[in-house]
Length: 75
Image (cartoon, rainbow, N blue to C red; front, side):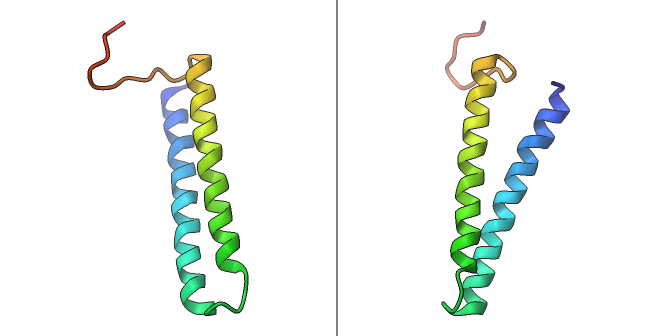
């Protein structure tokens, strides 16, 4: 899998998460508690977040993504 495809996939997930967060805020302000659209939008956001975390963990385990960080030994 190419680096740009991985980056686009992660950015796509993050944009969908932000979109659903914004939709939840909008429905919260507009509906004033008369519908379940706020709950549905926030539920989708949580599901997307969990899915993204699981996909990143799987990608690390399969070697598609190499984690790096401060204080890690190179190699």
